[in-house]
Picture 1 (tube, rainbow, N blue to C red):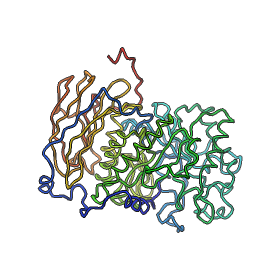
Picture 2: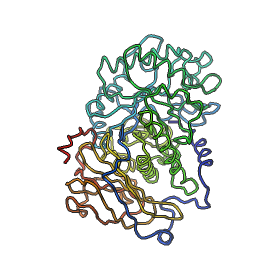
Picture 3: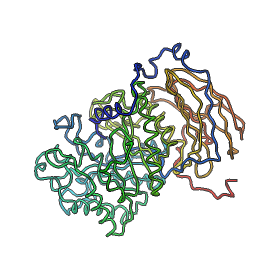
Picture 4: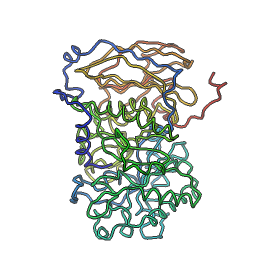
Amino acid sequence: MNPTITRIVMSALALITTVTPLALVPGILAADEAAANAPASVEVSVDAAKIVNTLRGGIGASWHAMEAPIPYGVKHPDFTGYSHGGSGWGAYPPAEDERAWQQIYRHANWLGLDWNRVEIEQRVYEPERDRFTFDNPEMRILYRILDWNQKNGADVFFQQMWCNTAWLAYPEFRDDPVGRVHSAPCDLEAFANGLVTLMEHLIKKRGYTCIKWLCINNEPGAKFSWWQAPPNKPLSIAGGLAAVRKALDQRGLTLPLSAPDTTFGGFPDKFPAEYDYLPLLGAYDFHDYGADFDFRTKGHIAAQERNAALWSKYAQGDGKPLFLSEFGTMAYGWAPDKPGPSSPQSALVGSELIIRLANAGVDGFNRWSFLNRGDLDGQWQFVDTWDRQQKKLLAEFLPHPNSYFCLGLLSRFTAKNSEVLASRVSAFRVAGWQRVFAAAFRSPRGNLTIAIVNDAPADCQLKLALSGTIPPAPFHRYRYTEAEHDRSDIRIGPQREFAPVAGATAWQDTLPRNSLTIYSTYNLDHADPGIMLEPKTSAHERR
């Protein structure tokens, strides 16, 4: 995740959105103005007989196994941010700290993180050419991460972020700590041999079958990126992909590659010529940090729906999944230790992005990030493990406000490989923008979860109708509302005042302003783990 992308994202948005004179975010519009512009109710219908997509992933977050500091606050011609590794390092306890890791595991279980991006750099496992270090502090952290994913049936999108090794950097970069982290490998065959040796170690020797995809570099293709030739020239990753694919095949590893992994405002609206390596890939993935509720740029998510649908159709035609392998928003402030990335607005816009892009055919969603120092380029974390003032690990790891209890509800109540069902939402507009969105997920065992976000600063009355085969279990309601904003002491369980009868096909409710509502046949008390792997039942059992 790259802090300087704000400038690029905003430029891209200017090309794909229509500027309006209003520049307002939730909570700024007066309630009476909202009421004057919005209808009193919204209708949501779900057709359980029509499947829009079956997720080939799920919803999760980024985990990293890099603890060595990366240069911070040092100038670079095009990287004008803070940490040259973004916030992709730090904030994890030593692997030997059992008490700390049990806290991490409990939070991951509660969140139900079932599709996770796990990140590393080549320095960790190959600090010198052909000298592999598979038993060092950072590798032991990597094993801790993969152990949890393996045990809980989560899928891992394995990511090499950058090389960050003097021996593999271009000669001009070898003595420059900043240049090394941004350098592409000068020897692609050696690069591929090292990365595939790691994959062979993890998959064949340690048995991590949870590793499902491999991405060889983070956000290539721009002058701020981590695949550059001197002085700061972005290179195509085509040669690297070809070298890694060849090395994987030679060692009998069928692990599919994913790319482009770029972050130019999300899903592009065309298939650029520089993506000439698509035949080498087993999946397509992109990053998005441009979504917000500012009316000048709100068209961004709508454009992403269109572009994601375009890429989804292309990917499905090739039999490949399409992933949003990093998402968040920088619209509400982000650096160096600002809370903007996990503000209420950011959590809601992230939830809306998942809901809308799931309907557009995206197969997996990775939020930046699970654990994060929060003092490098903003507070992105789901869980607080780092004391930002004292610059050390905390003793108690607590939920981080908003991201944990808003975005976390979506991952908590959706199973990996769920079906996305057809849904329709009637108009609910404020100042010309649609403000209510819904998605319906059916788990492999037939449980149904309906997620509805109301990003307007006004309540609205909901009329919900279900058709098709409806689960016989009753629905329960879970919510993130303004009462939960900026709090870490929340307990979320079924709201007892909401109790439609089992098998109900319609109900009415109120959607609070600036809220996420979950209706689900899952009955989870606060102490219960979230939903992750759910083996599919037979057709007879589902009937």
